[in-house]
Image 1 (spheres, rainbow, N blue to C red):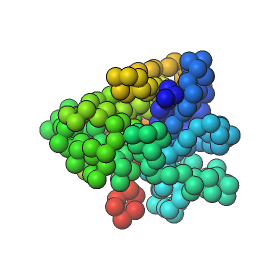
Image 2: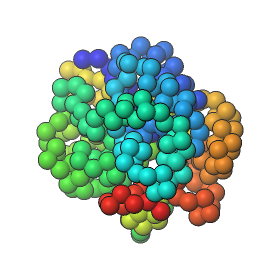
Image 3: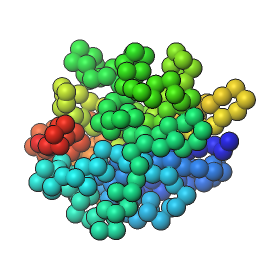
Image 4: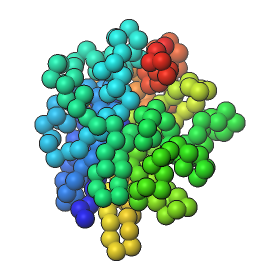
Length: 272
């Protein structure tokens, strides 16, 4: 069984993506799976699309931002989707439309963005108004409920969406891996209540999974990259909030005046 590098949530940060791909190549890893949210962000959506569309060795999963780019009108998008939408070509849209929402990437390994049947679901975290930053780790029961009909059917579940790098075993012996975010280490959202998601450092992140005689195991990785280049691009796009998150791994700029760049659409598909 080959070693697999899991990446996710690039969000148009091309300098971070290139550094992660270089690290994966140097490690001799045979397979790369990208768990979605490719271009929407504040840095360089065009560059990220150009890299990923030419890397036929990378398996790409559709995230909620890809779905939003394909289904929402521009005036209903958040800032990050709007920036990406401006550079999308017809070929880009056709490519995004081919990406699967879920895929068995190896025997017993299911990959998806949020949860198997919901690209907006936080699988390993729960939004809780009483917790620090209104976010806590989900209980086993919550995770199993969110896995739905896929619970107990796979040995390993690979997810993204929350930008937090986690490796977690469930009671049934299955493993859940979130490789964290390649390109956006902190954001805030207001649904279902205002909360912050913060990785706490500016690193680009990915995780390597490998199966041996004892089963699957995971190695979490953090990578330095040309942070100054990414920050400069974010400022050039009018995104001081993204620039601060990239530099620090924390949310720092008041985004009420900017609009909720990472705000999730409602179930009806509306955005604020």
